[in-house]
Length: 276
Ligand SMILES: Nc1ncnc2c1ncn2[C@@H]1O[C@H](COP(=O)(O)OP(=O)(O)O)[C@@H](O)[C@H]1O
Ligand SMILES: [Mg+2]
Image (cartoon, rainbow, N blue to C red; front, top):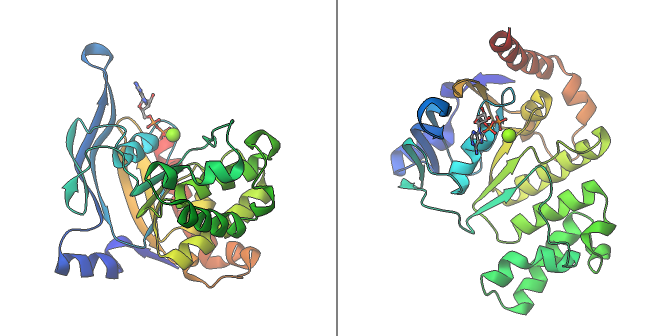
C-alpha cells in the first residue's frame, strides 16, 4: 500500500504536538570545495521524521545520499541550513548514532566478540554488562559460535552482520546505514533484510537506510525518500507499509503482490524520469 507522506504521519503529528521531531533537515545544503571547482552536493534538503521510522533513501549515484547521511552522523557540517536532532544542531559524531558502511569497517586484529563490544568498552560499560550485550546481539545474528574468530575468517555477509552488531551494541537511538547490503549476493541480502527487519520491529529503533535497490527500499521502509542529482534534492517522500507486516511474512508473496509492484514501479518511474 502506497500513501503520500502527508496523508499518514501519526509520529510526525504527535511530535508537532509535543515538540521537535527526532530528526529534521532544514534547507540543508552541502558544497564540497570552493571557487570554480566547488561541487554543490546537496541543495535545500527538507525532511523530518520521528522515532521508530525506517527511512529509506534512494536515488542515482552521486545524488548526495552518502553526504546526507554523513551530516546526520556528524562527520560533515552543512554549508547552509541545519540538521537537527531533537531540535538541536548536530555538532559531531556520538554513540547515540550507529553507522554501518557498505564495506564492513571492522578491526582485523580483534576477535568477533571484541569487535562487537568495542563501542561499550570505549564508553566505559563494565565487563559483565558488555558481555551480556555482545552475547545477545551475536546470538540474534547467528555469530555467537564464531565469537573467538577474526574478521578475515568470516564471509562477507557475516562481516556485515558483525558491523551491524557493533553499531547496535551501543543501543543507538538512530541506526544510519549506507548501502549496507550492496556487496552481498541476492540470497544473503534477503536474509539480512529479514534479520534487520526483525531487529527493527523488536527494538522500535529509528533507521536511516541508503540503498541503490528500489525494491529493498519499498520492502523495508516506512518512508521512501527519492533524490535527484546535480544538485542533490528530494523529489518525493512516500509512505509505504509493507514493512509493518508481521515477522515470518512470506517475502515472495509480498514482493509479487500488485500493491508492492505498483509502489516499486512508481518509485522506479521517478528515477527513470530524472535520468531520461
Ligand atoms: N569529499 C568530496 N569532495 C568533493 N566532492 C565530493 C566529495 N564527496 C562527494 N563528492 C561529490 O558530491 C556528490 C554527492 O556524492 P555522494 O554523497 O557520495 O553521493 P551518493 O552517495 O548519492 O552516490 C557527487 O557529485 C560526488 O562526486
Ligand atoms: Mg554513496
